Image (cartoon, helix red, strand yellow):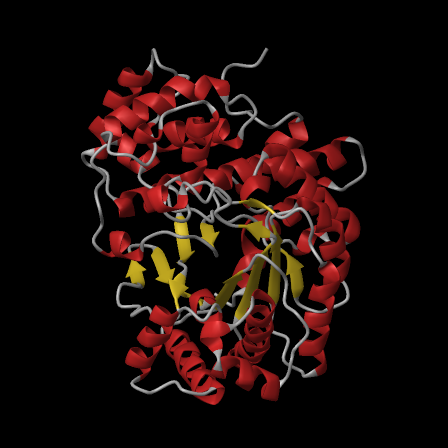
Length: 443
């Protein structure tokens, strides 16, 4: 029996151990996250471990609900210490859950704490971590994890006045116009303000969007991102879209999708011209517990995966862009993993379209491994763009170590069985863990 969370955790063969050793200290490029750039700018210092862990981590919130913890200790008014203790209390129930790996890795990498977390050890671990947090800032955390590049997620109307270079970390924006494509009235009003123009017609909106894309690009933005429950509908054309926009306050759900799909085609053409990467996150079913929405707000752990994903619609969308010579570099993320093989085969039909990381609920030992195996068998593993956090937590950079171990174990298995050359394996590990995404973003 191996020791608890030893250096060899998740590494089952000598080849896996050797491959992991070659990439464990590589810098991190986090090309999709929800970190607060102002906390990096101000070099924020967390008050205690409970704030670092439970201030906005819906993964942990969801696990606590699953184990019966009262909402007071999740998103309620309990203190961070009380919330931390409740998390520690239910933590031993999370065997096999990625949170178990991430939490123990965060304790070890950030604080050198190797003791298993539980109710009995909670206060010892809290005291030891809090002592170190007194002299540990956000930038210290980024330096400890060797974070080289962070792409935050920013509304199209964001000021972008807090991005920049902090220590050895480049912090850059990502253009995320979801609210505008949803015809959010408040966001449209903000767009008029930041662009100093009236937006009465579809052409007005497109001109304002082009202005904002150019502004983001001037701030060294290299990525656009779109989150959607459903994939785009076929482009309805200018005339229909203009009529839909004219009555944007009274559209049906289908009409909203028609208008947003037309605008997405337009934005994709801008991304192609500006040499920006387009990320598409889809197959989400948001805020399914309507009674909890007014209590906890959005992004609180009540989102799930869609039961069906129409990948044929994605083919039509990409083919439309290709036929217009307007297809940018594209990364695809599905919350429903059943369509990963279809996405992998699709990536072979359109140049510079890649299958993204195993996303959200799929960010598990088996989920990541299966995603990598699917890319290996249906596409090309050596072109994979590696890991990202998709997180609001600065401690979540332990997930890169999690990913590198899983990748090393997978590739090491091919080596151990004599199916893959060890020298080629070492090169592939470095490409997937670092150089592929660096080249893809032209960093």
